[in-house]
Every structure is written in structure tokens, then in C-alpha cells.
Image (spheres, rainbow, N blue to C red):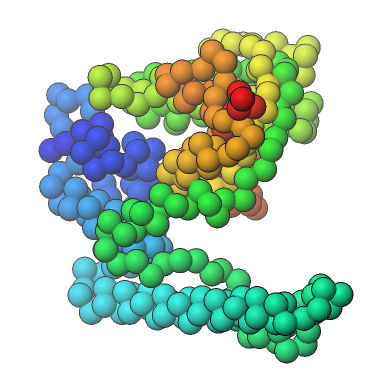
Length: 325
């Protein structure tokens, strides 16, 4: 039996992701008698290892759930063959892209200077591009785990990052350290939103969260803090605290919940920028170096409920500052 902290550390997966896998019914934990923490047995640790390998191979969670629920090797073969067919199709599309780019290069090299821009609208070239037929072209051809990790490490190059200036302003802050800190702090924050009718008073209210303190092998628990932007004249009852969010310049990258592993890609992106560098004055590892996670549409959902709510998306927001020359 291993605790959630032990499993998180030994398998390099966040506690948040473990809880999400539980919510999706992929793994289960239990409480031992006279033991305060939830634990995973060997069967569920084995299931987790399989999940992590299949996720590295880009198998969707819904397909993994089918494989685990059926327990049938034939069903697993069917799912994996579908994935292989998808990769083969993407590989063919990548070949078309490569050949089309080479054609562009060749034709542009032959054309005169005055013809080069017009050439990009050539019917033959546009037909070649339209023949691709795929909107989701990704590099998924690696099969060895080391190669997959290398590909993951390079994903920062493809991120669609935007610059966001957050204004300074008042927030309602909620903080909890202990088991399942996100669940505890979200419950406090949601109660505040509902009782204050915050969305009616401030429909542009936003919710930001961050680890505080960050997970560490040196402590049994980590913490999570939430900031909700509020009107100047709104009081914040306990257990909340009214604070001033400092604001500043951030690099933002949107993810589908719960793909928080993409933090490492955003961090790598920041480390390779010539104009800006990651970091914020006064920030430390204990508070994610000033990073924020903005849960989009959260205030509306907290007040009105989940019915007809859009899929949960999160902006990963990394503070940045000009590089010193």
C-alpha cells in the first residue's frame, strides 16, 4: 500500500492528476483502518503504470478506460490498432506537408521577385494544401519512451503563447494546506461566490489559483490558494481574506483540464525567449515562482452550477520580465 504522496513521488505524476484519474474511474484508493491518508493497493498501482505508459503513447483517456474496463486483450488490440491507424494517417499527412513545403521552396526559387507573393495563391499549390484534409497534425511517430520524452521536451516550440497584462486589484483569497487542498479551497471559494452573488455584482470576475506551498518530499502535504477578483467595496468574510493582487506581465498558455503537465512546456518556452525571462520579484518555489492558473468561466459556474457549462479550460500564466542585457 502506498499513499498518494508516495505514488506521486515514485511515478512522477501529480497528486492532482491522480485524483482526476480517480474521478474518471480509472483507479481507486481506499482508507486503511486507523490510518488518516488514502492509499493505493498493488492492483491500482499496476493500473496507474499502464495509464502513464499509454498516455505517453498519446492514447486518449476514454480509450484507456475502455481497455481497463473490458480487461479483454482483444479489445485492447482493437484500441491500439485504431491508434496505429491514426498515426499512419498523420504520418501520410506530414509527408504531404513536407512535400508541399518543398514545392513552395522550389517554385519560389524559380519565380521572379515580382511573382513570388502571387505564387502562393497558385491553384495547383492550393489544391495540394487542401488535399491534406486533417486539422490536427501532430508529431506522434515516436514509439520508444526515451524518444517520446524527447518529443515532449520540445513541445514548447509549438505552444500558442500570448502576453497578458494583469491589473493590480482587490481579491478574495482562500488558502488551505492538507489532503486534497484544491477541493477544500474550491469549496470555500464557491460558497463565497454564491453567498455574495459575485457574478451578479461583477460579471467579469476572474479566479486564479496556485500551489502554496508547492508539493515537496520534505512535507506530508502541500497547499493551494485561490484569488477571486472582487469589487473594491466588497467585504470578504472568514475564512477568506481580502488581498491586493499585484498584477504584472504574464505569458499565458491555455490547456484543457487537467493537462497541468504542460507547465513544463510553458517554462521551457520562457527559458528560450530572447526578450523576456520567467520570474517575478519576491516569488519563490513555495508559490510556483509567481505562476497562476486562471480557471476560465469559474465564477459563473460557481454561482450558477455546471449545467450547460463549457468544457473546463485553464490558462497557465507564467510571470515574465525583460531580460537584462
